[in-house]
Length: 281
Image 1: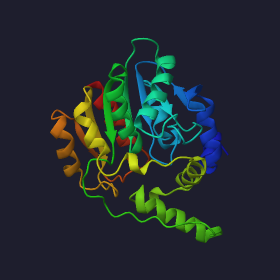
Image 2: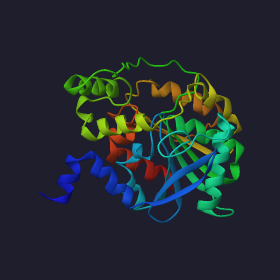
Image 3: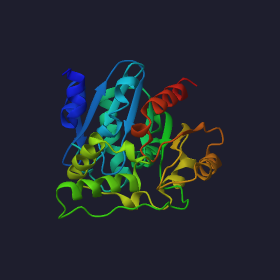
């Protein structure tokens, strides 16, 4: 059996293999550190994950993106391997991001930012507080636009075991993150469980209902967006586009066909091509 086939059958081994190829950096965050992982060379692209996630939300994209860019994946405060910020608000997150990027990028260096779901809102506030770092902000399936929330269906798994537990986890991924049943593979299930286990801080009040739309008029960097065609929590991409264009009329808004909320995982080839093309324009 080839090494590639073995990794595909062992999600933990696949995650570990990709992580071992990264340069790991830890910078101050609250009473601990914020963890960054860096692949590739070239112009910097900072990528962020959704709530109860980690850098691994981008696991199907890192290799393709790192061929063209220096990919800087951050574990947002209170999630993954990062500590809770000094203050439980967007100012606290932004302060931790700024401390890290001063070390990683060096003085006077800007980056492009691609934020999925919660991190898109956090990056928008960061672009407001620290515009000197942000050349471009790309929002990916973000809430906080004060638009109608879609129907999501998440049920508890506590007490469930075996196949019943696995079935509930799969249903939860389809109830929020993914659109097609075939997209819920062993890797997606593994990431769901591991990332939820490592989450120490949930920031619902920092998103709902309008925390993104409130800050977008204050963002001076270019703002673009990518949406999954079947995003459940933030449906009807045309409505989201209208709201974003109120403050950023030149927004390059693109839709990934056949993808749900976690578009970069569900349709990685289309997503990678879209993001890289967007970054060249």
